[in-house]
View 1: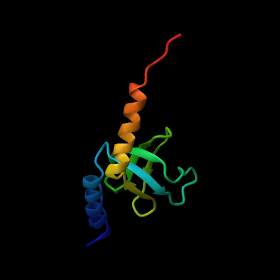
View 2: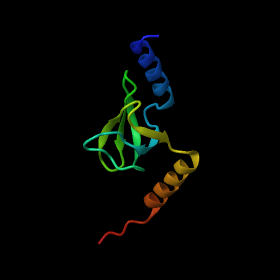
View 3: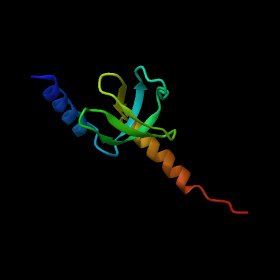
Length: 98
């Protein structure tokens, strides 16, 4: 299999595993001059045809994670539940207007 076909196949697998809206945790970035800190969470925006996962990170940054260079994973069910419970508490706290 040539490199283009191999990369297209890998990109298809990544697109299936990381659809838009998937919550991820950045484990480590490769050699990027403006890297994002490890353990930063984000949401997948889209995956391109080279397998780069473009994310909107919780710190406000947007960046593509390159296949083979950057390390990331989906949040676990427990991590998602914790995020949802924290978000629920934050939304349900009363607002005090003065």
